[in-house]
Length: 186
Image (cartoon, rainbow, N blue to C red; front, side, top):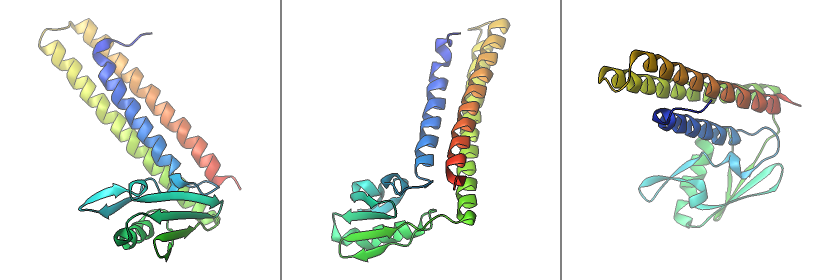
C-alpha cells in the first residue's frame, strides 16, 4: 500500500517524533556509561541553552565514568550544575576544566525508575503522534469541506491516517519494550 502524497507530510512528522523518542531513549543508561547519557542535557551558556557536546568534549574511558572536558573555564560551574540537575541523578566532580561523572551501578529501585522514565518518554511521543493524527484528520476534513475531495475519498484518507497512527504507535511500543528489557536485565 502506498501512502497518498497528501498525507506524506504527516508521515514525515511522525517519523521525526519516533526519531526524537529514539534519541531520548539513548540518554537512558541501561548498562555501560556512554556519552549519549549526557546528550539530552542543556547548559546555560552565552545567554542561551546549549547542548553539552557544544560546550565541551564528552568521553567514556571506562564503563563507570564519563569525563567532560569543558572548553571555556567560565562555563564549568554551569555544566556541573546542569549535570547535577538532570534526571539521571548524577553527581559530578570538578577538577579544573575537567568534570568527572562517576556512574553508579544500577540498583533494582533505580532500574524501575529508569523503566518508568522510558515509559514516560513513550507516552509523550504517543501524544505527539496523536496530535499529528488530529492535524491530519483536520486537513482531510478541510479538503472535503472545500470540495477538493469527495466523501468516499475522505473516508479512505481518514482510514490511511489511522493506519499510519497505529503503525507508529506499534514502533514506539516495540522500542520501549526493547529499552525496558535492557534496563531491567541484570
